[in-house]
Image (cartoon, rainbow, N blue to C red):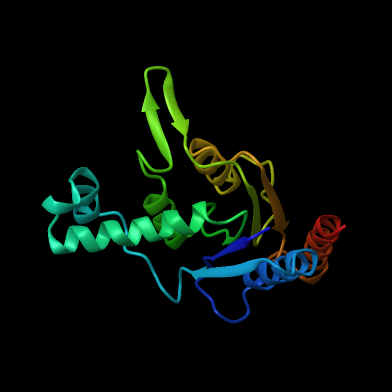
Length: 200
C-alpha cells in the first residue's frame, strides 16, 4: 500500500466522535501498512467552495480559454481528483447532520465527481473511471439510523462512490450517541467491534 487518503468532515475539531474513530481506524491501518503515506484532507480546516458557475465553466473550457478564476477552480478540483487517484485506501469521517452528509463533504464529492476524469457517459450509460479501491466510512449518529428510511447518508455515499467505479465500501457506524449514556455506550462498543474486525 502506497497511500491512505483521510477525509475529515466534522464541523467540530474537538469532541468529534467521527474524528476520533477515524483516527483510530487510520492508526490500525498504519500498523498493518507502516510504509503507507497518510494524506489528510480536513474539509473544515480547509473548506472547499460549493459548486458554482466559475468551476462549472472552467470544466467546460480548454485551459487556454479559462479565466484566471476558472483556471484556479479547475486546478483545485484536479488536485482533489489526483489525491483520490493516488490513494490505495480512503477513510472518510462523516458525521450525520440532519439525516445526511455534511455540506463540506458534499462539496468534496462535487469536486471529484468529474465527467472525463472520474466517470464518463456512454451510449449504454455512465461508466466509472476511478479504479476500485478500499473505502472505509466512519459515521457518528445521534440516533439509530442504519437500514432505516431516514438514513440518507450511507446510500448517498455508496451511490456517489459507485458512480465513479468504487464498489468496495465498508461502514463503521457509531450510533445512538444522543440516546442516553447506556445506548451511547452500546453504540461505541458496536463500532469498536467493527474496528477490531478490520484490524484482524
